[in-house]
Length: 238
Image 1 (spheres, rainbow, N blue to C red):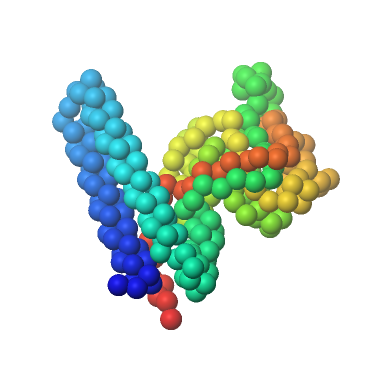
Image 2 (image 1 turned 120 degrees about the vertical axis):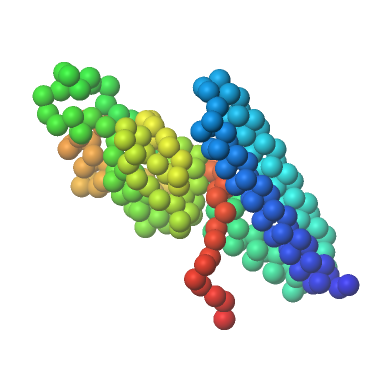
C-alpha cells in the first residue's frame, strides 16, 4: 500500500474510533440520567462520579488515538512533497476548526459582576451583572480585529458555539459558567487591544453598567481545543 493509501486508511480508522468513543460517551451520559431518576441523592452522586470517570477515560483514549494518527501521518508523508503539503493543510484546518490546542500573543479580557450588593444599589440591578450580550459583542469585535482563536473560561469558541443566559449563569457551547468571565484571544495584540478605544464596547460597558472590565496584552496565551464534535448534516463537498 502506498503512503497516500496509508494516510487514507488511518484517517478512516480514526474516524470510526472517534465515532465509537463519542457514542460510548453518549451512552454513559444517558445511563447517568436514567440512574438519576431512580436513585436517591447519595446513589446519584456516586453515579455522576462514575460517569465523569468513564467520560475522562474515553476522552483520554480519543486524545491518544489522535496523537498516534498525527505521528503516523507525519511518518507517512516524509520525503513526499505532495503529502507533506496535504499534512500542513490538515494542521491548518484543525486550527481553524478549533480541534487542536493553540498558543501565541494576544489579549485577555476579564468581565466580573459588580461587588456592590443589589440591596445597596439604587439603579437597575441588571447593571450589576455580566450579560451574554457583553460577551458576544466582545467576541465579535475580537474576530473582526483579526483574532485567530478565542476562548471563554477556556471553552474554545467555534462557528457552532452558542452563548446565552441561563438564569444567573451563562451557557457557552452548552457549558454553564459564572463570573468572572475570562475571554482570551490570539492575534496581533495592538489590533485586539483596540477594544479599549474611546466609544468602544469596553468603554460602553464601563460607563453604562457597574460591571468590572479589564483588558491586558499577553505574550503567551494558551487556548485549548474544543471538546465538541462538529456535525455536518446539510452541506456536501463538490
